[in-house]
Amino acid sequence: MSLLKSKHLLNGIVSLVVSVGITVWLADDEDAPWSLTDMAMAVAISSFLSGFFTSYFAD
Image (cartoon, rainbow, N blue to C red; front, side):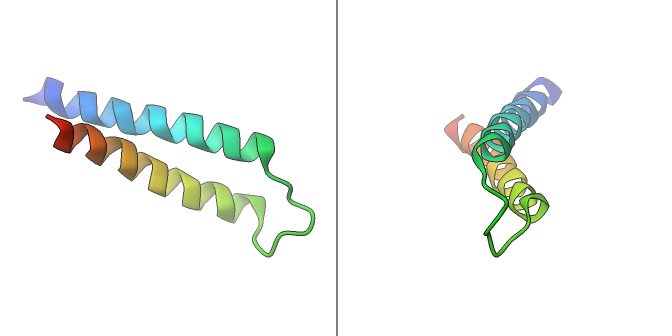
């Protein structure tokens, strides 16, 4: 059972790293109403949950 949980956690972390990396790389922080930190945090939360629960419910 712990292997199953770690697989879901790993999928969430991979999704988080890829999504935040691409967002920070491509974001333009000059004229945005939100700071780059706020945007990266929102992307991190949503991408982790998306990766975790997609993996969880796919089984």
